[in-house]
Length: 287
Image 1 (tube, rainbow, N blue to C red):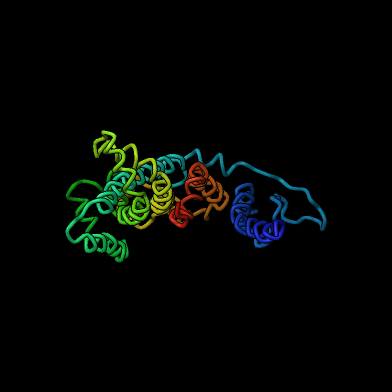
Image 2 (spheres, one colour):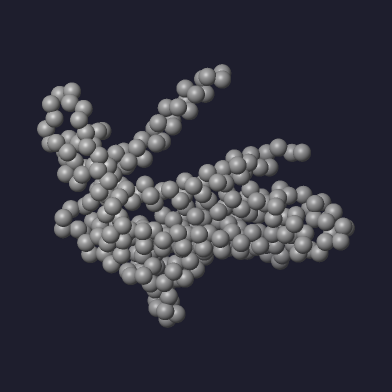
């Protein structure tokens, strides 16, 4: 039984990492080798290799080109990556903070029409986001928010807030009220009990919520394209803009950029992995 699980885990691991491995190989190829009609696992520069010839050539030109503005672009790739980092992290932080406070209110206090309010919060995700892009754009023009980081941060926070509230409410509901009551008996104020009792015990839920909110904001394309064309352009929009290049789509450069684009999400997920694993079974074991 101990070894049988590895028969499932190892093949799944290779299957899951296959796209990333292909991106890595593509990023090390030349443009000609990347668009060749003959697929090759080994990066080569020669068009015709004799059978059994294992000569190969690896180039880092794709990574070097990311540091310089591409044709038709005002900035280099890392400028757009910084935009994604700023917008993604700030919108995620705001969503988790507001979602935790709102979820605590619904979980611990009697609110008139609480179920209706919760359903209303959830219903904001029923409508496809792009269905409201025109009124949002008109409203943003009134407040001079297009082409600003603040505009996307507010928008992503608004769309992720419903997810944050519902996820956090489920976690806070599992925290016994007796913990807070004991803290109040010991002389803590309700606010102190929230910071010293609720927040530490809800760290798992906050980590899970943060991962989902960050992934949603990190990969969002529609609003980032409609509301920005200059200063706050994110990486997904940058990649889409490379399709109209007269020299062809620079696949090695895109592959290199995608690998770098995935790194922050992977690092963040690894850092909170213990909370994520605990969040999967949170509430299933009664103590």
